[in-house]
Image (cartoon, rainbow, N blue to C red):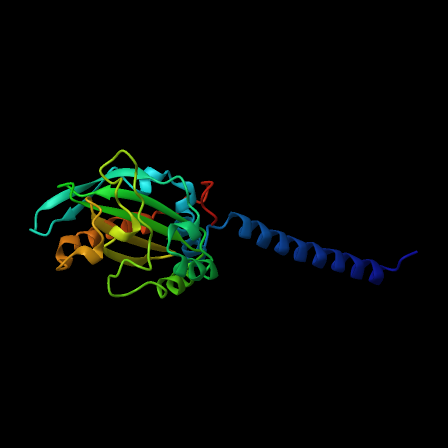
Length: 236
């Protein structure tokens, strides 16, 4: 037969265990029902942005028209001619750049070609997707900084359109900018397909609007959205 002290100790231990279990259970429930922390929301936002190239429709990244300021200062719109169905990193850029993009973890390069309002200049825009900001920055360092189109993004002509003579030799200007985990790249030339080396005098200002196009695409790709933790594309 148990003595009263033994029974009392057993009862006390049972009570302690129950309290500990209750506290642990309450903590677990609190963890489950608490809202995401600011850091978790920040990470969720970064993850959502990095996956847009794969989730979004191509027309959302490359809209039908893009606004720009012309050489004369007028506000005009470039019209999209077509979007490539290929997203392979190696074939979207010149061979001397392909290895650098692969080492940086390039996931895809999306491309579309636009024509300016006067239909004299064609521009291929590219969005290179990387795992994170650091990887994109590493790949950015491989591109020329002086506006040279080669090595760079390969021109994307569309047969039967005004861009059908946009060959690689016809690339005359280029620009590249980093936008978070993306590089937004452009290469431009004239619709008659003349090679850059055939020009007696370069006129860089005629291609200055290309920077507006890359900025527009970069802004859309990295626009901050309020996290919706219940959404399939969010991981809060």
